[in-house]
Image (tube, rainbow, N blue to C red; front, side):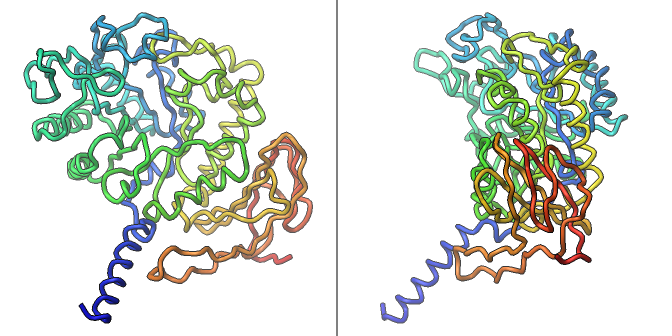
Length: 483
């Protein structure tokens, strides 16, 4: 090979590597606005009402509507495996102390509702009632594994793996793992997705351990969903796999990185060049797993003022905010567990800090609903981080879209902070010579005198702010005013 040819091959290899590395140069799949502009609430039926049933949950849908929720996400309500063989129980299920074989994430029948929650008709009624209020319904798909006595394992032994003695092999969490190398498994499960859409009225699905299942399965499932629902339905991945939003998923989990200004910023910018342009994330600080396993609970771990700041992050950052059952009441019940009935104490709504927390969530949901800048554009085109002086403890970003530019300044500490925010945005370095030249991302204009929302914070100059402990300032940028 000549030196010239060798050079050409080398350049080609570098180019291919650059294309592979720069996922952000491609666009994420188009996702319906009901999802990207929504506010999600994860309903854990065992905690949401004293009865723990779908009928009881249906009666509380107007409450969620009033709170500002537009997406109700149900943890699995399909028939659970009732085997008392604890060798097939997850360690955390055993540790819970409930001695309850019914694990919501150990399914025996993917098509029918567990009697603990009611009937198939109850789930249909729940979805119909939600739709009547303008609330979409997301259900949970648990396809990595199933229950050890699931009837379909007898009918289709090829759906999983077996030991030489005829016993089923255990996968993660000690459950039988489904065999996605078997075409019949894929056909069966995609048929289940279609059934949930058609018979119950689901609008989308949260995919349990979604990145533990071959991505091409989810791509095939979404193709079916798009054809069936005219691209109305969505798939949310519990996990994070670079590039999975090209076709397979509409969003991934956006995990809260912790109460630190730099970590909050880095968590977003770190994934910026790993994911397709316009990638979407569901932001939350607690879910059924975290609320079950973390002690102390988030409210005690972080403290009430810090959780208020986290909620502000959830509702103003790029992505979809997701509340877990009781977050809006500042619930901190240490007895909570996904493995047994631990109903919320709804009296928290009438006393502090629950009363103030409920009002805050309503206000943030309203702010998100009223200002398109928070929801109109996903990814780097809709959010720009701003430098802060001094940088310690404070983060700042602007959201742009729908003809608005809005600045969000947050103090992530219990110390007062006087700071100045730079509207000059340095051009970021790009990892590839084939990347397009970056556009001007400087913020033009000045912060309006009146805040859209402020908590323990005030404007102290054209681009200066005085923030009390855990204070935040959200304000519109008036482009007609230059300081």
